[in-house]
Length: 128
Image (cartoon, rainbow, N blue to C red; front, side, top):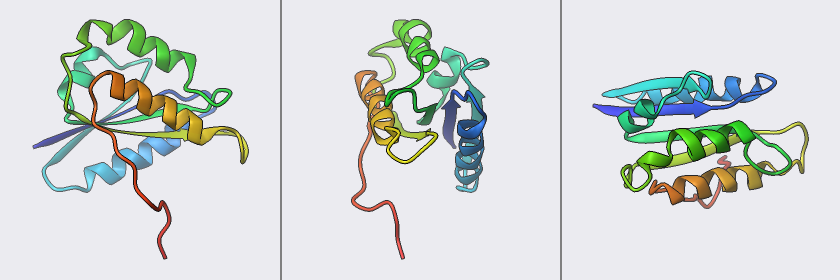
């Protein structure tokens, strides 16, 4: 059984909508159990439980939200070097084009890499 955690922070509700869609998509994979958790309800046990993590944050001046950073700095710090090898990906929402969404995703991925998650890129995000 695969375990996928969709962990997110959302200020206006847009990132929460995205998180629900990510969780719905992951739940369609056979033999996969998903958990959808906002930062307000998430615990370290949720991250320890998962095999893969989709991490979502609103774009905050081109970076992840302060609440997301605090979760990893405070809640997950004692688990650093204990969760290596899990798969990670990131998503973010912003208010406009050029709002720094790609930089926010990069900051989320950098955080995951520092905790030992395996992240990767794809060559094209749109297909015909």
